[in-house]
Length: 192
Image (cartoon, rainbow, N blue to C red; front, side, top):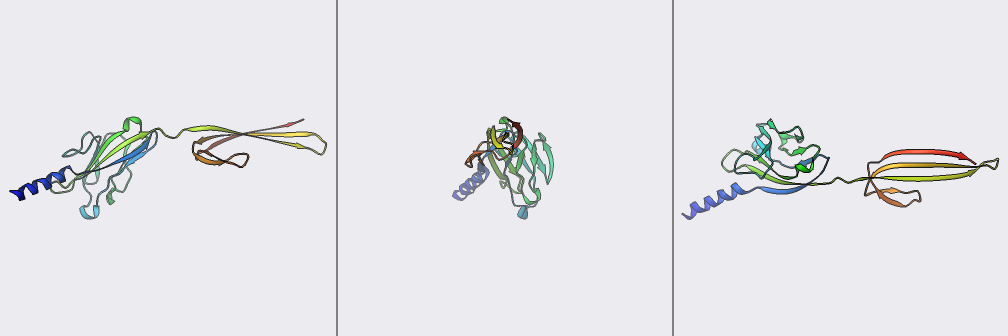
């Protein structure tokens, strides 16, 4: 009787075991939820992704499913498999992720045999993307020509920068700003 209880307990722990992790996504950007399995051992298998924790069988609120390497169902074109499925990378990429995409996703790989399925639960936490702030830099250069007249050269540069990245200011000091800069400059010359 004890042996039977031990076997039953072992089966129950295998049925309920699943790995869990958190992934942070930025609104408006692509986000990838990881899920991998060993194709060397099992070959290409059927799998599904759902919008809840992995249940006892299949997936709940299925967003994508594949049968033996061919995608059978995709709820939206925003759900993509960009990894190498033949190498076991069945990570789900959500294109242009939005606040509404946040929540728990479950990946189930159907491994042959009883209670063998590989299950991964991922909690997608959505956050606001870093903001860009306009930065204006002005320079004035005054010169005196041979004829004694003074000239001024004024320039302004406008940059949209992502907060947090380093940049050199007009005095040679390092400040922080964004990495993806778009620049526009104006130049004016006046003679006095």
